[in-house]
Amino acid sequence: MKNHHSSSAGGEPRKAGIRLAVFLVGLIGAFPALADIPVGLTSAIRIESPTVIATCKGAAARLGFIVANDSSTRLHLAGLSSNVAPNARLKARIGASDTADLGSINIPPESRLDLLTSHLRYEIAPLTREIWPGEIIEVQLDFVSFKAVVPVHVHEPPKGTRPCAQ
Image (cartoon, rainbow, N blue to C red; front, side, top):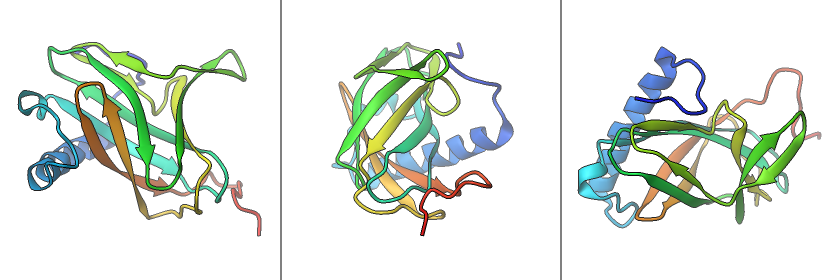
């Protein structure tokens, strides 16, 4: 499988991705209205390591994940929505600090789109409430031909940072 915008594959992200894929397949079977991934693609598309850093109400939060497309079908991620922010933007870092809004992105067959460690990212904003380490928020990925609801784990901010001054 080709690896686009990805750093080296580690054991933990892969295990988390496998657990998430199993969870998503079970979730899709139990709640068909939540996601309508075409039947032949359910085992070939995985959302790996979905994470977000704890962030204050009103701020923007960076959402990271990897879309693994092991299918022979090109995917088109048109957008996403979340239960904690009304807006989401796909951004690309250009140079040292500039960014550009992309709107949407294609994921070629048999490839990976890395929105976790690459220059690409999703931002959700403004947060309607503070999100705390250890909680799980819900995000819906809107592909052109289907939608998928993904549980996203909220992580601690980096040591030495205080996202919400008290």
